[in-house]
Length: 203
Image (tube, rainbow, N blue to C red; front, side, top):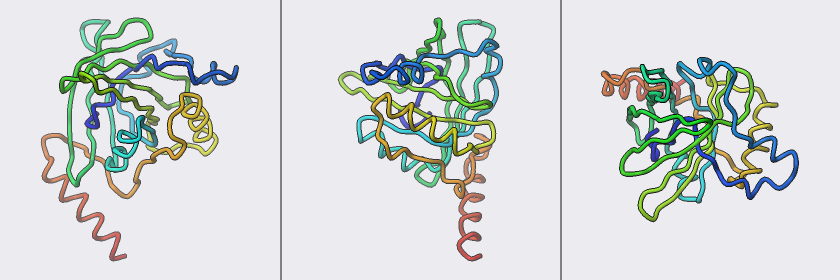
């Protein structure tokens, strides 16, 4: 994703913060029995970053989606994304190499590594770390098929983020921002979002 890409199938975060038995289960790397369930489009609903600079960066991302696609190589998956931030749509695509429960890729001179975590039905939860020379950071991001999530699943996410020592004040999707839908029509989408926001204010 655009905010240092927030990668795909995602990083083996240090489990040093997972000291309690329930934490160990909550942050165990996960892969569904049928990996095909991961393919398709997912909409961002909430997340957190570390250190604080990357956590605050999420505030500028008003909406986001990702799309996972298979390739002819069973060990490679294509990740596409569309982020709405800084009043414009930002699109990207990268191939991730999958090895066991871990996926890695390189984007904008940064090396990314990540893995999935157990989450709710029709949900996708990943944690991603990256390194660019001496700069490192990490994210945990919750996606669903619809962009909506049940309150009990929000609490489950909160516990997982806490176990991994992410900030407690997690970021959530701005439902008024709209989604970037087509990377061939960036300017049109920008106008659509702006017009939508204006009409909402006037209503």
